[in-house]
Length: 479
Image 1 (tube, rainbow, N blue to C red):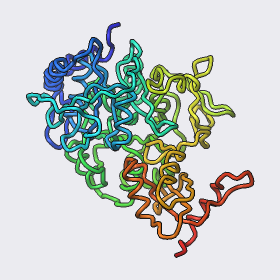
Image 2: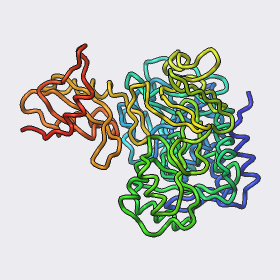
Image 3: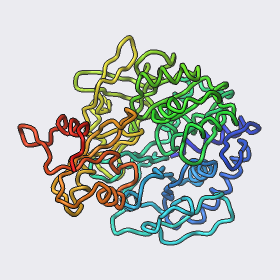
Image 4: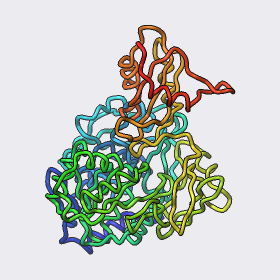
């Protein structure tokens, strides 16, 4: 079967060769130069293949032009990229490497990958600042990819093991093409992207989608603070800003007076954006925030084109959406195929008509989607889905812990965060529990709020009472 994505990128590079493609703190690459670097890196990857099937290459790094080169090189080499969240720790990384049968890992030289790599491989600088390592073999059998799978991304699983979503090349192309068409993305756009390219917010809106019309993609290193955003916007004259709600809330708190003169569109997704933040941001900068709704398994689904009023906008091209009492169901041209490492789980969420059950609840008002709640138990913090059962299980394994419950709450800024109430024996401290969690979980899964108690309040059927647990957080902590 002929691959879709290499041809799509090759066509874009041929049409836009003299234009600027991507920048980061270290420099810039035009379309032609990006193509040359990706081809050279692809040739290097091909030398590392010791199997009679496509390489499986994990990309485990923060945003950079080198990351884009690595992604493209993987595609051009006929390999399959596995876009892995750089916030994952050894716990998740080992499970991804084992569950998915990774062959190679592209990573920052400083990344702690000792738990999964066998040897560091040499190169002649084709991957820039990124290192290439061979992943060690695990005892588990290697699951077979579908014939049309060209890219894989991850979402939180119900067992603490990230679920690997397989995407056909046609689905990835449709996500990008329909996003560009539905949002009016053009060659004149300059996209400042502060979401990780491994996340659907950036992957769907700012990678292939940017290159199809000949736009430029501008990436930033380090934590996306309000001051860093302003510097990138000013230095690139960006017309689009792509970020999670937490960043918009940070900008509103810092209230910068400059930096947004060229920005026409700000895009938010991954978690609910408070209406007050949207209004304050627009009043401060003059830039409307356009909400966007998407699911990791289905790609981008809606877009609020006018940037005004509440709601998540109308369905994008290639999307059919049903908002019913049992929850929101969607069918999209950008839908994933299945979970590589969780047979049958994805399929259980797709009905006989081909609609995916999102786990969200909502309604369509005048063609605009409004979310009203969730039917799933996952907690959404900064665009990352966290299974509270996994967190509670990790806490229960700590010395001196009697019981634990984890759930979504709000921090002092009113932003969603992960909270945990833990019943403990005398002498256990919040710091000791955070240290215990950090040894097993990535940083974003360590509870932002910890409350220690002598017992977990329960409801009439013996389950933890989330209502009473939330009330506990507002009460003074007793000594």
